[in-house]
Image (cartoon, rainbow, N blue to C red; front, side, top):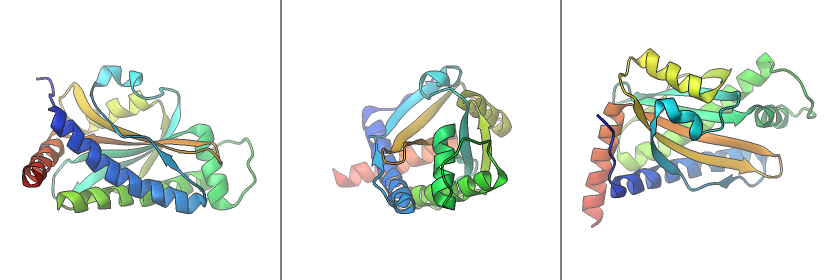
Length: 206
């Protein structure tokens, strides 16, 4: 059965994501001590086999968090970083000169900590809006093609669906040439609960 979202539901999801992403962008700005620009969040129903059309499908760094809290099997939040951006970020965080190199354990742990702070901020803001508890699991870092990661996550969850709702917003720092994306992949139970609460909020506000 195909996923269908009404226009007002997409708008509400976009606003929810906008609030969360703005908090994450503020955190990143503080860490870099420079301005971070944020794109308007995109909400798309994506056939998982076509995910490569919606996100750069080159090998990238992904810091992955499972959403935990009141809704079981909530889905995932991912911090997606181009490999060059990821290394520049860790150079800044560790106070190192920028050099071409392979990823080290220090790079990995720094990126996981950065992702943890950003995603916690994202989930805190969205959870406050929704009035439910949403917390991130301990992070996992992988360097892979995003499409392969999406399919792997769905396979691990045992979710028998062909389509997912992809929330994505781009965070960029021109000064440091950093390009990243925050992506939300809610599983059906979490998506249903988010839509239910957002519909209630919309009814109250009208």
